Amino acid sequence: MTTPVQAGWRADATRVMAVCVKDLTAERRTKSNFNAIVAMAGMILLLFGFALGADTEGLRNAAAGVLWLTILFSGVLAFNRSYQIELESGALEQLLLYPGERWTIFIGKVLANLAFVLSMEAITLPLTGVLYHVSFPERWPEVLGVLLLGTVGFVTLGTLYAAMASRSRSREVLLPLLLFPMLVPLLLSATQATAALLGGDVMGDSRTWIRLLATFDVIFLVGATWAFPYVMEG
Image (cartoon, rainbow, N blue to C red; front, side, top):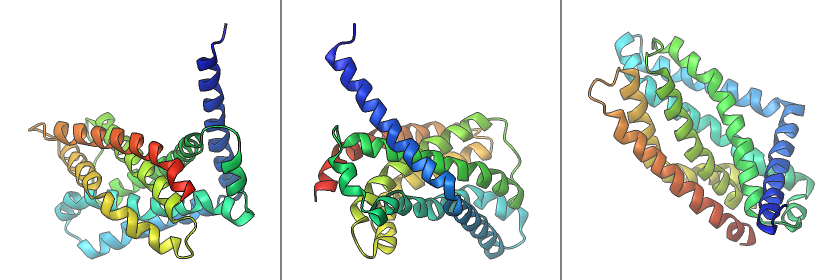
């Protein structure tokens, strides 16, 4: 027998998946945004490579930082798009009036953006390895884990700040100005953990940074989910 609490959670989960599937379906039909962002990521990797020069050791040492900066600069373009469809069609207000908890809209959009950014990283990561002469490390599952932890925090904050900037006429400029300063601790942790693992992590330096990344994710996810309904009312 289903209790009222179980029925409520089931309804919330259904709303989360409905928002996520809606956003992913809209992107799958056009593919223009994804193609543009992947091209942007490839261009950033190439330009950083040209700026750093032909020194193989220097490129290898800079690979972790360049990878995360590429993810940040390219991924932020996806967040504006996540609210643009509703704004262009005037559907955002209707979506907010839909019966149910508003935090389900936020989690649904976080999941859609997470799938989008992870798909972009699936192309960016091997491209970084080729351009920056980084061989696949023995501890590759941990590298992928760091990538996932960093992306969860990045997408959570990006989705919240995109909601804050969505009603502004200059939202494309406002979003990175608001978002990037907040990402400094996450970027530092993710870059240090990735660099340590790509270098073999003989001293076990990555553990502290990974714990810090996981802490950021929990704080960002709880705080952003709580704040989203108030952001949309503002």
